[in-house]
Length: 404
Length: 148
Image 1 (tube, helix red, strand yellow):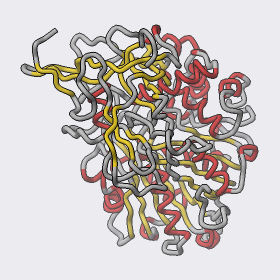
Image 2 (image 1 turned 45 degrees about the horizontal axis):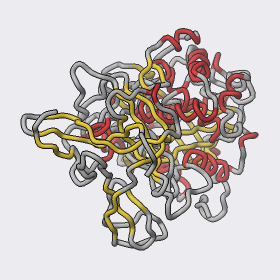
Image 3 (image 1 turned 180 degrees about the vertical axis):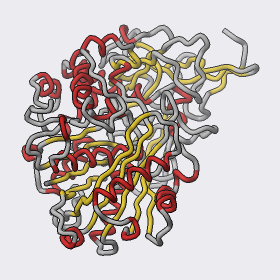
Image 4 (image 1 turned 30 degrees about the horizontal axis):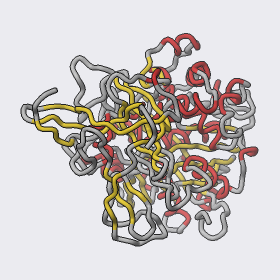
């Protein structure tokens, strides 16, 4: 039996009082600046003074030295020591969701009323590479050392399977970039605000066949923050906030038979049979069960398009269509704004580039603006339920359901 | 080729026979689950608490689960050739062990030469060299001849 949420598989909502972001880019400043800007915007949006915050949950970065490993303390000090309690969370690309889940646990346990969650990063140019120093027992070091297996190599292995097994075409993989470019054009926090034609995407150089340069997300600087609170606290502020209905941070189930970054091999299914559901659909299934909703209830989704092909995988994991049919949904226009289920109305990672510890929080910021009807020209009409979908390196599920 | 010493770029992970090199995995003595890389201190099957493992040579051949290439030089710690020669890379499923293992395809093999499901076999090729040693790594080579 799959683990549920407590004993009842029922939703335990908390309130989103405020959200804020520092625009994504390649600014080259200290990551703490981005986090502070995002946090101050989120606090102002919430109407909650910093010194009223009970708890700060930081999403760590591994690239910015010691302050990045103790992000909860780093942001608390930057905003001014106030005696708040803190946590610093690391779960690779899922760090933001882990920090948000830590905040929720504090609130649902009755230990905190109002919590600030912050993630920010400053990234170097080029491929994400492992930290320096020889580490022959670290799979992340070994995959680069022994086989030159960069992140795009892993993305491309999965994309290639779509192409050969499901009939996904080069044009389908490129069209995701075209769609996301149209959406991101109207997002002031997006790094790339430019429309692409299908031809422009298809003419960009192949990085790892079948994926091209414009189909693989860049790395960016950026920061995102969210103020969450108990429903009682929100009522005292006389707010009718959007609510978090589920946060799925599950791990895979043994044996995990999908090759996941950074591993050199999968688990073996010779002795114990593979589970009915692969990791990605299992993450989403746990979120749906926790919120008590299904794919038909969704108004929009923000999914991790580390590669544009991966966005098509998520359509299927979200159960928006049968496995193998992701490109049909795209071709029919259903995932465009104005379609049945818009995906990455924000522009997605295509337009942002990944700022690792901030990205999962940025997805929740976008859902919040959409559900409040504050998303401007990229607004999805009458949005009531949104979901985020993401996986962090080393087996970190990340999916958040937000409701109006 | 060079008369340098042939050394495994990652010791204890594979045999160095020129003809039929093998990846060295492990198998749990209790639940029989295979592991690669070798894993000998605790079983990761959630229903098994065994701490006893046997070293096993994994199948020499498998079938391509997926494949791609690296058109640009990967960053360190990879040691890229200068000038850089793009390489192809595959994830290969071993039928008996029901495990998928990553490895470059052998020199000269491109993405146009292979498809998902193709049979490949293990080979050793130079990863990098220094003054005294030729450091070799496992790769996958399109299989020729009868299956074994």
